[in-house]
Image (tube, rainbow over all chains, first blue to last red; front, top):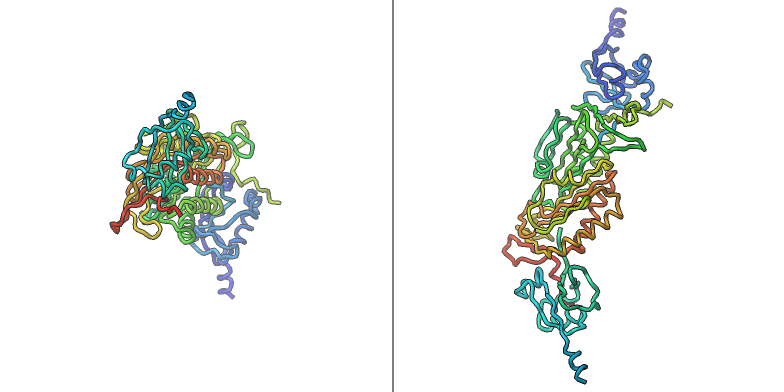
Length: 92
Length: 92
Length: 150
Length: 150
């Protein structure tokens, strides 16, 4: 029983990176966040969108990058990952 | 009768310009030639081709330029004209 | 400034743009008869509005790795001798260059095709964002960020 | 060296090629987001033979006026801000630039289309001829001059 509870409480730390309008609204360009172990990218976006309006507004158009590569929404975030929220890009 | 004879003998002078393989075979890049008044470009090429083998070989592919513009074969050459024989070009 | 230079690829995100001569010399190869250099320049208008300035934000490290992915893919799809991408970050006023893409190829048509394909992919995948400033003192806008959640 | 420079057109036949930076600055316009610079480079092969050197002959005065005709026509057919053609004459060894074509346009695709169209017309109408020298010590050949009379 004790062991099961411990497993549920297991957490990871990830570094979030914000850019363009998300960085402006967030007020920071990077932050460290503690997350439940096993959380997916899609779950992370849903959770953050609850308290971050600009992410909520853009969430359908945000692509997730983990450690500087685009990943699918179901990708699991691991301890130490760098997670970036990529709104539609407009370089060139 | 005298007047007719004089008219037939009327001549013009033109400057011929040679380039690329025609210049190499001709041995000169420009020359002044005396021509019968009223001669057309096509007639000039035919006449020169009789004694200039390389022009004869290329004559179907030569475009004529008079005073630095392409002209049609039936164009009449006038006194003082600069006449160039443009083999297929290959710049670039 | 983040950059990477191998034998056949040269990428730079941020910093000053290298001179065009230097870029041309880098991409030139003896078997390539064509060098194509494209410069993206800040234009004084967009969608009917007068633009005075662009400001580029960038996820530098990932922009660099995405450009590398794009150029490696382009090297497979086109007969490129070499290829390069340079992108400024920060402010780029009207008339100034924000991006350079350069390639060499044996023949001319494939050089322009490759350049256009590379730019297309930059505009799709490279995490660089442009903020447009207008002369009517209206609010500056992140290009592509106007999308509503509907 | 023959050259002509107006507000929107710059042409040079013979002489040293101007620096790419200078050409880019000449063609750039505030309403144009794209600058495309094409360099024709002497390639080490042609039709399966090893080339060591090209030598260009030119009817300079007419080459200049034909380039002007081509650029004026291109200005009507494409939304060019400005356009330029530079062509060397004489010897151009492998790896060196013989020709530069440059344009500016509002958008990128039309910049490469215009450049290709201009080159196409140069290769058709501008009285410049290239002699190819091969490394097998075979006779040098005027390109396009092999046509038989049959």
